[in-house]
Image (cartoon, rainbow, N blue to C red):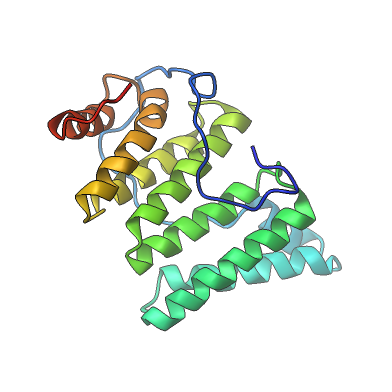
Length: 202
């Protein structure tokens, strides 16, 4: 977990105690649509607290940043969106606290923007990070944890550099084992990739 004096980073140390092995049932082999969802607190604040300028500003800024996910954008526009999302993350974390449940939504947005940029290694690590936040908050069966795991897997598959792909595979394997289950197809896929490249998974 992040502390207030720590910068927001997309990944950290995953220990065996952090992940608890999940029930494999309920993990869908098919991929869910990759999209985004406005944090509920921002939408609710906009609807019910029109006088709360901070809540209004958070909702407006999130919506503005999210527009780059569903319209054509230039590389320059995506780079600016990524920069703005990083600043937004810092502002929201400072205002709401690092343990607030909506922090994960902002960082999911950062991962989705990174994917649009073609930065799949960065995107995979952001979604690995948000999967961890959801697991800490709600456990390995939480739907948002599973959605983050699926985003992680999708971005890992698109990493073009073999060395980077292998490095990220080692990072995401404990998460997939926990959320999807050790016998699930996503877990086996990553495990097989590491074994094919003679990389120790222990």
